[in-house]
Length: 362
Image (cartoon, rainbow, N blue to C red; front, side):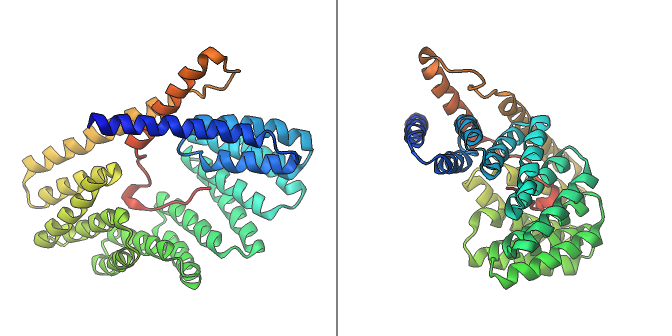
């Protein structure tokens, strides 16, 4: 275990050194706009693995973009900063940067940029429960993607709208959005999106107690995930199907699917799946009037949920180390912060949309 831990830390240190080298190389690109493009690309690519270093690239990218006086390139930089502040949980700054980027993209009729900004605004508004504004943003994103004929992102925008409707308990409206997304996803052969649509529709039908129909959709999603060897998300499918069997009081089948979900969730340390699986087990025993075991698993569910929320809170509170210039003597400390952030990122999986509904982000 110690050897594995040391290897992980060494990998993180190497990763940080590679990014420092890339930063040095990009600063020596002669063409101004190409330099901005490369800084943006690297910063965006590492936004999940190393948000601190991504912020460093974004701030330098901002400086270089402002020199070009190019609205398109300044907007790209503001978008990246907005994404980073969103991930950090600073929604005020995230909104500011996304709105600035949107205004710039609108000034040059950059429909792709507009669609990306509107999607990001929709995600922010959704997270802070401004659902009407979220819907307006998602609809604007959908309109922009329709203008560009980007079928993949049209489908994803429809899924975002469907999840939004679901969160407002507008179940029939949500299903309609997912069904439209399913048509687009099938047309372009995006099997992962097809599986997500079937999963989301089946989940809602289960909530409506339309259990036979729910099972058909969830099993179709399962087949596709098995076909494309998406083992990670198979845990979600198994768990969702188990919940249908619990409601049908088919406890043998429910137990089988719970075991299948548990095998994958444990194998990959899939925290979100384990969280939902604990809740499913609680419902499984409650349906059999074994309230003692139901309570045991419910306590495990809430204990894990509290643990995840604590880790999320701690990771959100980590400040970017580049808010001021880093002195040479502080370089070592900054690298340790990089490693700590990445280690937490590996341990934490965010608690997402309830019941495994999937929202797509940019």
